[in-house]
Length: 278
Length: 308
Image (tube, rainbow over all chains, first blue to last red; front, side):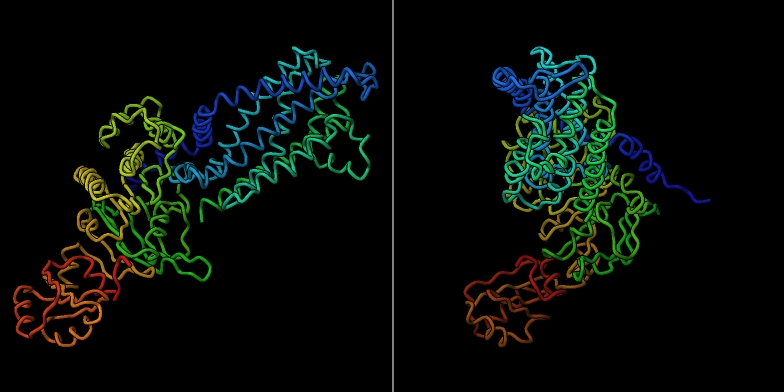
């Protein structure tokens, strides 16, 4: 019989909790760090829907007489059409912010991922913990958004719409996790993040059927919508609001968002392992 | 004898064509203060990363606390305290919060983290900085905070990679004092350094590493006895004249090293040798008799200076 040294036994005991809860410890740390810019998070979570819903939903909507979409009970208000897309783009906006500069901070500027890496938590847990913390911020943002949508009467079916913050979260992960994998692979920021912001996020925001139905866009540009998590999430949110959920397009949108999130998660975890375990 | 906390056999690490660690053997018994001494790029940090279970080995065997880092990384890391070469404190958290957050990674309850954080702040002489921002600390204070953070899990092995590089002499001495206290308490220390005075101060035993290989192993005193003489005479004749003077000094010492700025004469009787130099009619601009140090050992073993 082999004798297990007390030091070996202590080590085996010492890793039990980190092996199980490591990702949560990382998320706890990240959320604590977010307090440093807590006000920005709160102000943007409440301020941005206020501005968009007032400006576009009420202001612009007043000039649009032609119905742009129909729900289960006929044509719907323009504000019903646009609000779910605005909610989803707010989620994607938070994901873009958190999964670029914050990642570079962790690996390079503040190097805190390296500190975590020396502890019992694994690179996969560091990756997942970061995702959990950003997920919490996205959910906070989309919930605030949804509450304001209710206040503005921008939702057709308030009960089914309760799932809309989750759809927003899914939009954030579908766009954010592949972006996380990319950001984690960068050794330094030589302007790539600004490119993502200007040449990926902005066109996606404008051409994903956010402000008008995708089929009113020239056919040659419609593909932007098809590959855009923002379009799929907007359509999901609209179906919830109009009460038209459950058809095959609805399931397809959901499947696309889940697939993008899943692939992004796998790639991101792999990149974290490669980077931290050279 | 108790089992070693670290045992490496033929430990090797290659990155493509580059061999960073070329098959090294060493063991560290519990409670020892063990050093890896060598110049930059010798493979010290790579060895530390393998022992720290954050980098896989290419060949050889390695056991830390009786476990293989390949399969039991989290188990091993749960018992280590790691002080990296570059501080990676969270500058967005306050000093005390850095310790608490880090303790959580080891699965410690928040209350335990808080109690230990206060004890460690006292140990690191940072009590009055508990609420400060990390960026407001001096370099030496940050280093002490990093050490305090590495102690939050009461590690069996504290690993320090170049702990005092970049610190001013006073800050180094404060840090050495803290490390010496840990050593007295029985913590196993593993440190890398390219400062021979640091190795002499802190290490019970060390290996001299160069080009990924171990050149020699022993206590600082034993290495000096084995690879150098008791005393060294340093003579400066001006950079143009050192080489010629050295030729004339041939035979006066057990060994002569000519460096660009000075000539080193290895002998057991420095004062006597100085007199012989004077008899030869040589007039060095400066002369100094000192005891041999690990720097001399390194020079002897590799033909190069530690700090270039």
